[in-house]
Image (cartoon, rainbow, N blue to C red; front, top):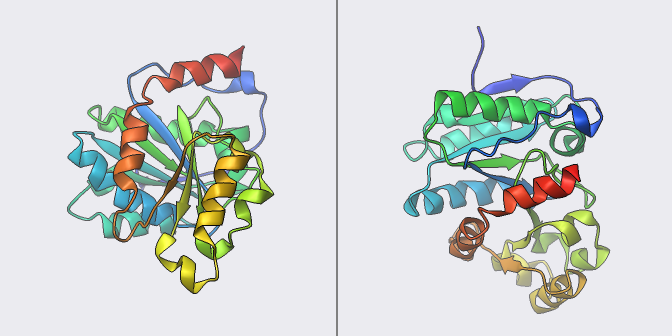
Amino acid sequence: MHDPTQVRGSAHHHDHDEFVKRPADGVLRVGVAGPVGSGKTALIEALVPVLIGRGRTPAVITNDIYTSEDAAHVRRTLAGVLDADRIVGVETGACPHTAVRDDPTMNQAAADEILERFPEVDTLLFESGGDNLTLTFSPALVDLFLFVLDTAEGDKMPRKRGPGITECELLVINKIDIARYVRCDLAQMESDAHHVRQGRPVVLTNSLTGEGLETIADFLLSHEAAGPARQETATA
């Protein structure tokens, strides 16, 4: 029996022209990337109620290689807040980069199914699997993407650069509450992040207390028009 909250498959590289183009349907599509353990899932779980409070109707698509554990975790955490059927897990069967950048058709199919079942959804959050610093999202899939670092990874992380850090629309430095316990110079980490991003936005967050989440919501909702611009760039 088909489980509408789980999509399985094997992502393979295809030429960009084969992608199903992202429709201009007024739905804000946001990617959330970052290394394993940086707090992507916790960030999404904290962000969803904030978006709902702003009058948005969100849905969540998670990516894992062999399981849909992140989707199950989101369902448990957001029980009573977000309809479980609006939280879908994609089992990519391959590198997470492939399913959100090289060939995002599995995620596009999951999004299409959600929007067919729930046409009121106006915000889709795509969580990539655990990534390295080269991860970016295809403009055919999302309007903009966040890249999440955390203080436990060390204040050196922004200096490592990588397209995920330098090219994301918003860099998130998460778990600021534990910086002092993991010998992370938070001020230095933030300064380096601004430097390598040449002034592009950086936000500090604590997903457990909600610190920084309103700032992220402000940023996302002020960039709803970014989708067409990114898609035109990708297809130029």
